[in-house]
Length: 97
Image (cartoon, rainbow, N blue to C red):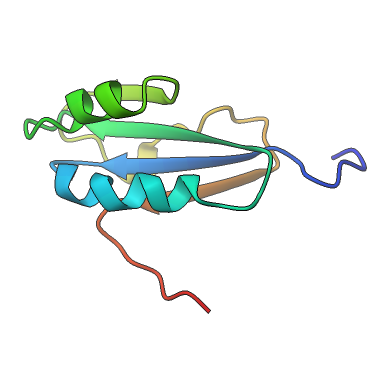
């Protein structure tokens, strides 16, 4: 990693039938103060309108629709050369400090 004070961080959101969670998760991720990040949604063949929701509301964000029964342990993180990657499940909440 170079001496970049803000290296690129990739936030990968894993989703399966989680549209109601994406409505809160994505704005929360986008509200970060960190200046250099990307958001990638990996959707596991949801049938609840998750993909359409993201395409409509966040057209500039990367979206990877993956096939059914895709196990998170085999998920490919994008891009793999990044030194920092955060994996987020849309239906999990973290406590803020």
